[in-house]
Length: 206
Length: 206
DNA sequence: GCTTGATTACACAGGTCTGTGTAGCTAGTC
DNA sequence: GACTAGCTACACAGACCTGTGTAATCAAGC
Image (tube, rainbow over all chains, first blue to last red; front, side):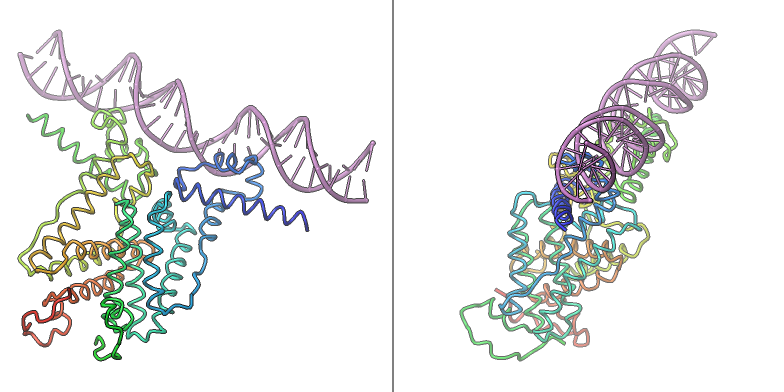
């Protein structure tokens, strides 16, 4: 029992360090020896916990597959706040783009489990948007959630290449326009935030 | 003279094959021996043309840095046609995302020349949008061109992860909404393409 | 025919990588 | 104290990588 807890702690420690190294320097760029050294265990023991580097890779990605929760704020604000969160991420030292897209780009073998995990992640993120859009009664939440995700991924790629966090603000503004065009009143109100009365929806797309 | 022409032909042949291999299987995944074998020359001769793999990488990326031209079509149609072109690209066998973003993701050294070329490429693409938007007299062509580029990059990432060309259509529709919100009449006309009269711009976003 | 430059095949240096094999040590348990 | 499970250090196999050195060959121009 106590032994198992200690083992789990070591596993977590391994995954912490693997995450930092794989994300920060690239999966192919990091060798197993480096990981073992950083963790402070022998390579033999590392292989005892994870029998191959591939398992380390999938564990690394699977651990980043965490569902995002919802707050008490109005849905439109939660959606737009996602882009503010992105902007903060882009400004953090060590930002290197999307871990999943990078993994797919690095591991070009189509059979690799990383592809499936990356797809699951993107779909999870899309469904997060979709759930919020569902509360907003937009006409086509499937398409709009995908479009918002495209803006997120585009902003990530842009920030990676440009090294410039403020692309997130352009993405946020584009998201606001899309929401507004879909008839979300909060997005319109956020635009000219002087007039507070949102006189119900009058014209809706389509 | 004739010798120089033959040399250039070999150089082109090398770059053709390098492009196919680097883009299709990844820069790090392809060794110099593989390149020489595929070209049909000895490794020594290959190193005679390009003295290091890094030079091959930069030549590979620089050759993909070709400015896109303009057609006779109306600007808004050219912009939207870009997303149709994307959809066709996504469906082609061998599509593996954006060569520049992949290169930056693979070559994580920040000093590498690939970063600068990738940035130049993205900026070149943005300026292509910007030029067309300039003809359309939109209020903020700098922001809007960046937003269109974000949609492009988001669609590329989405198509890479999903293996699904139709994300380009969602991106195209989002671009159309953004153009329409910026007061581009052709985008509005394209929406309800029944009524042909675009009764000049009446309300413009500000 | 001879020179000269490019190309070839091949070996190799020196480094990286993943994964395994082994012998000894250490710490908890009977 | 003896046993056992896990750990460590270390070597190593076998493969890959980039880049170079070398001697032989081939082909064009004088």
